[in-house]
Length: 336
Image (tube, rainbow, N blue to C red; front, side):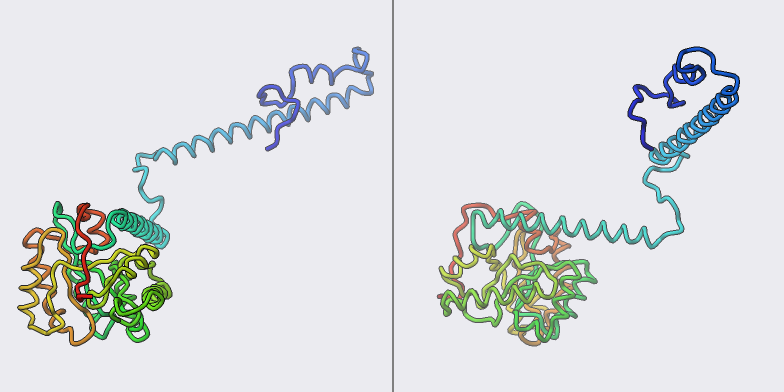
């Protein structure tokens, strides 16, 4: 609705008070001639009908405004956040999914910022802090033929983990990585071909890191922020590249040596023996027969929870209980 430009105040008739008097007189101020009286009466009737119409519109507007206020304030005794109708479950479910996606994105940003904060004072970690009740389960060398089964076991136990994946394995077993991402696990960089990093020059080290990152992004996963060196091999060049690429090196505090196939009970015992607040436990989901590791997982996770420890991803550990400042920088575990 567009207002007249000469209106100085709100008036339901949209007329100034003197307008009617002027319309009923001639230009000289005297009464109009007899022949003009009929026209004047008709004009007056039109104005009155217009006035009645505007009054009706105004009343309708007030009713609509009242209804809007009632809806917005939860009128009728209903809770203000109750669903409007029950006939559109699809729309309600879509809203729920959107909320879950927004929450996941927020969590990812928070954990990403936590990794940045840790990188500000150290390029590598072997453990988290000791003030919380969290431990990080980590798996190397995947994806492989056992990866999907291992992730399904984690899902059945409502536990999350961090997987350090080899880029070239995505050509054959990318379904395992996709399941990890879909399950809320974290995928880190374990190089493209699993070499001894300290044996490579800067160019080749850079390619090993970058090609694996590209493969994860092509799968639709977030850019990895964590790196674990194969065989624990790294050098000064590795640190320089990690700094440039904003990657945090994640080593471990407990090695289960599950790749040696020591038996299910041995894997469980080693994992729980090294479990403490902030521990980072190393296992494998590929690189060989991993049926023992899969069989050991339920006892490991139940044993952790029995001790009041909660398995989480490495980024979550960095967010909730990061390592203290001033820790010595780890040296290459491969002796390089």
